[in-house]
Amino acid sequence: ALLMSEVPGVEAQVSLQSGSVPGTSAPDITLKPGKRFGGYVGLDNQGDPTTGRSRVMAGVYANGLLGYGDQLRVDLLDAYEKSDLFNGSLDYSLLAGGYGTRVGVNYSHLNYHYNFLGEGYNGYSDNWGLYVTHPWIRTARARVDVRADFGQQFLTDKYPASVFMGVGEEGRKRATLGSLTLSGSVAGVPGGITGFRVQGTAGSLDYRNDLSRLI
Image (cartoon, rainbow, N blue to C red; front, side):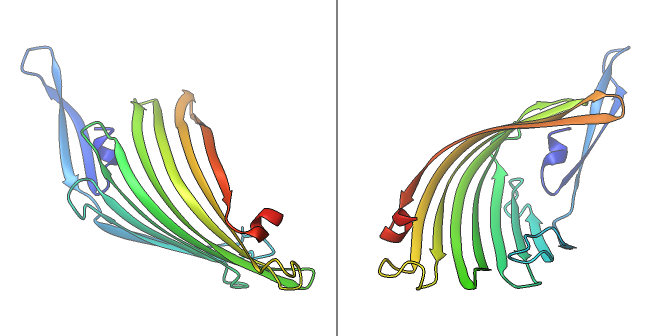
């Protein structure tokens, strides 16, 4: 029931009933359709001063589009105070097998702009990734998840022409990354929960033109 309640678009309820043998009990699990669609809108002032502290966030999700415990998410963030930062992401995942393992793919795009010493700098990045998550431990007191990621980031930084004369105005780089993450929480103290996260990452950076190698 703990795993079934984590499937997007499903609500699971578990109770105990009398077992087939006197003196025993058996779980009774009831599954009901959950929310099919949803979303959120939010505001905060936790942004960076150079790109704008005030930010607006919005997102939508759709569950069970294919009937495989799948979920499609779209998340957007904009630093509306200066309109110097925008980030959008698309994520799709679905169940793989009957043990709670999920596989997914994601894509995100980032635009940024800031001023430094009277000069304007801007750029963008396009990122894609693949991931697998697995619920390693599920009990009433503890939960531990394992996640493996692989993806690439294509980074383009645009500089004022007066800064790197003769070399170009765009620095282009490609980062290839892989990571393994162990995270979870344990209710080890009465009334409290202890969370943890350990991650290892390895990758490579490819400088794709002369300007990116120079700086």
